[in-house]
Length: 422
Ligand SMILES: [Ca+2]
Image (cartoon, rainbow, N blue to C red; front, side, top):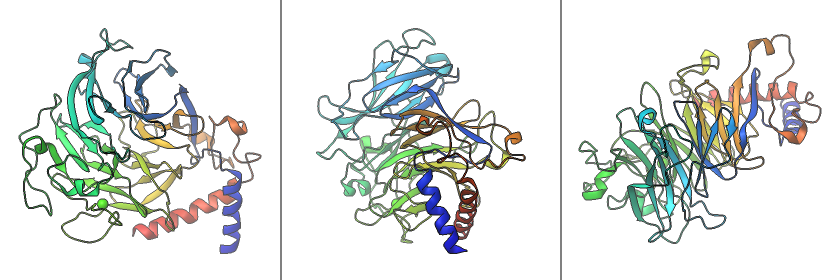
């Protein structure tokens, strides 16, 4: 039996390598139009989707159509093939009245450093900015290494602006209270520091002073994305690991997530460090990947997916191209989408669909929708797939033959994950 399943798995992998696959009842469609080098997405309450790109553009998808004119073009430090550039974006909690858009990007002036700037439309509700950039935050100058910039920014329900910053490939920064690198930071919307930020951090004897009073949690390597759960305001931090583990960390003020360089990502069971609530390896685990990217909780104001998805945490891996779910209550993990092309960000839309931003292949936004239970009844369709023109929307060679073995494979994977999570 095991040998048959292995052969089936090989067949499936061989025939669906370029297809994006979702569970039965779901479809995947390209959304809006081609966007290259996308890094970040944010939904406006009016239904527009803002999309930021590594090269400094903020684009708008309005009514499902990508507008030709960017909302804004920032001047970014983006040396070719590096991950410096525009990395994060969020909208003001009062966006409906003030129209503020916040972007995190690598600023070339006067020396390369990551910053946050606030943008505003040229007219209320307008689709282009007035060109101004209001300074909210300027981080320390970067070193020569172009890696580990973090970049995710989000407002939480407390009205504060949370900022994820990477260690710039200097792991010692992650444990230092005289550096904002390798941290989660917490600011007021105008860039001032709240008086109630934590003053002590696990495993560090001193307290932060001055501008470092913005530090909220420490010990992170490259927290590329974090997400806040609507309703609970729980924070999950996706910390990209080094050579072995990718982490999801439970964000709590004052905690130390243990990154001190070398092989110190992943669970170590070593106080005072906080282990990840979930980790997956670069080899030998299910799931398996090399760069955790997007994360979002499925708690939409208008739910579209089956109720079993409510409260789950979606997370993606850039290298493997999967989107999986983590159940915060049970710790169980299950496969959701496979074959996504370099997913870098996940968001839940106002329609309750899951949107992901692809940075490889046909780059742009993709929408994962739950279509109808009618599609499942009496159908052999284990997969719904579209938006991938390389095979005319079919799954595999004929669109049919991998379905049965894939269903078996998924069943086995799910059982393995349940046993791993136990
Ligand atoms: Ca860690």
